[in-house]
Image (cartoon, helix red, strand yellow):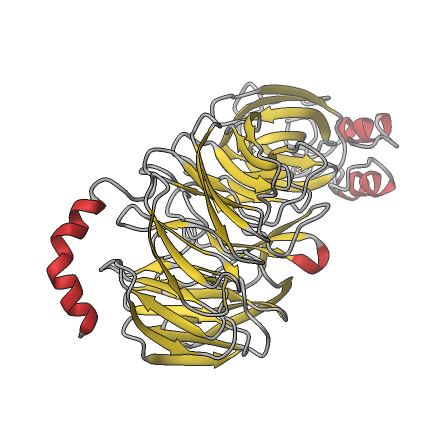
Length: 517
């Protein structure tokens, strides 16, 4: 009732504020939680296949934060060297450095493109950096062990917590760097808040989930008596969070427990939601999927500990498995791995961000930024098969995309009458491409750069005679020719006349011992 009265007399004032503030419009991922509810759910872009589009590194740095993405595609993240701005093609735009570490706080992007982040987690400073990389202002916050991230509310103000005593405060700060108010909440506040539809701020602390009005009044607190860290997620009128007591909870926006589930391990990163389901990681290494009503759907053991899940437009869950330096894409219905990538040094604290085209960005522990491209490229190709004298139209072609010797994706199509093919929705980035047509050996075209706005063209000459498709012409292929000799068999015809006869025998004998690339 107390909050209802406050909001009722202030709604006009709040609406006026909301008209000029807020997160950057058009940004696909402007904050750690992506939106005011911290859902970490993207509704844009194509699915991915695990191909690396590019990677960026400055060297001699470390990072424990997640990236954010501006409306113009610039990616921002912090490291021990400072705040990095990276162009959508992987080139450096600028680095802002004040000599202090910005490795633990994920930035947030304001309506005018200003980037806000925390420097020096042991005696925190909130800094505001212009889109051109110059300092706009800085504000001393103090506190100790500050590992939360700033957020911007629907009222346009910056909200940030400042860790442990002498911290323990929630700050509300004007975009010009003026403190509007601060509220002491607990002996430690290392939580990234979310917001209610009425502007209420929901934030965890050492012992509670707290609800704070936009004017800095404590409305209610739900007792947990264990640290509530990471992001708080709101779906409609429910708040989802884990804690150090190993319970994953749903609490109503009025402060009442809706349900709780014993996970059996500490949770301190936060969760993600697509509106129907909630995904959470625990220090046991599990990723769990719950309905918003509390029913466990599945759990996957991935070594995912302190990582924040991210949800793609197709429902794929992206999560870091810290125990094996693996980055996973998980199928939402089954919890099975769609693809995984082994990187050199993934910090288990990392969380991904997703661009408007579906590119997935992840910061490695060595402050290397990876871009995993969407299936949005194009390829034009053609093939000539030695010994084939018939029409090429309709012949099956298999195209495989490799990076560093690892198969990333495979596509099938058919040739036209001139032996050409066109593929859309290919992986993007630099790949070695292997082509096989019908019963040919494979041929590799190295380092083909595929992009949405760049369509490479390749053409290969293929050795013939691999009837059993093991990429070598040997005794097994010769035996098949002898067994099928004289038959009309389009599947094993090597010349285009439909028959397995002397011509096939000569091709196999001539190419005997040959291998594909």
